[in-house]
Amino acid sequence: MPSLIIDTDPGVDDAFALALAVRSPQARVLAVTTVFGNTDLAQTTRNAQRLLALLGREDIPVAAGAARPLVYPSPVEADTVHGDDGLSGRALTLPEPTAPLAEEDAVSLMARLVRESPEPVTLVPIGPLTNIAALFAAHPGVKANVDRVVVMGGGLTGGNVTAAAEFNLWCDPEAAYRVLVEEDVPTVLVPIDLTYQCSVDGAWLDEVRASGPVGAVLEPLTETYRAHYGRVLGYDGTVMHDAVAVAEAVHPGTLTTTPMPITVDTAPGPRRGGTLADRRLIAVDGPGFRTVEVATGTDVAAFRDLLKARLG
Image 1 (tube, helix red, strand yellow):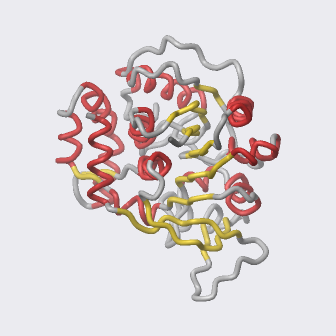
Image 2 (tube, one colour; image 1 turned 30 degrees about the horizontal axis):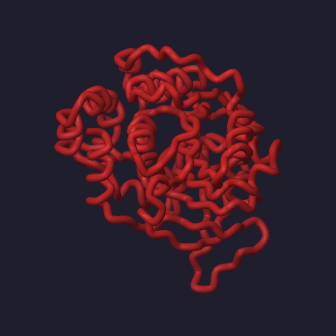
């Protein structure tokens, strides 16, 4: 049974991903840590607490992490994709949390839990990688008890926030470079090239809403996000980016992966935060690149069914 720490910036798709993680009997969620991203840190943290209250899992500790990137000021401004509160303006429809925030910060909590775990821990960052970069920099010894890092981020053929960059990596390219290129922990990268293939349509969302009390609360949170992706996809639907990565963390092998040398662009300019993969027939894991497992395929229907079942 995988032991997981979910590092997140809720966020609509993060909300569905958290539900998938904590409602999966095949995994044990040790903690939820928060980071800036889809909205500011105070709001992402409150959203995480409210979501765990909805899911009846306030026994899972929540710790607040980075409020800004490692090096440069955050490029993130008011987010029109997830709404001002990260949840289509509906965060207050979630239950008021009763469990207090962890006294430890996110990095300290992760370090302690990884050290104390009797089995290796899977880290699942589904937001900017700032907390994970800080964890490995400040506590390098924990890497010995990290099974792997399953990252939602990057795009092999382009981005979604700029022509080159996917949102999570663009928020903190230096952190992304440190985690994906400079570290040596086994890593799975789940890029938007795959997550877009796992989009869900309006009929699927309607079924989720009718499936039970959790789905009935979560589906309305998609309103702003669904409107955005309706324009992107060209039909009524949306993309559950983060839930695809969590599905792999909960059920290893859900995604088909291919080893690829990759790098992250940290230079100023139009490619900043972009992912470059060496996909030549004879790829080179040379300076500035590291080979990671890149998710390239999955059984899309099975993923949709799994997510719907866990929400119902």
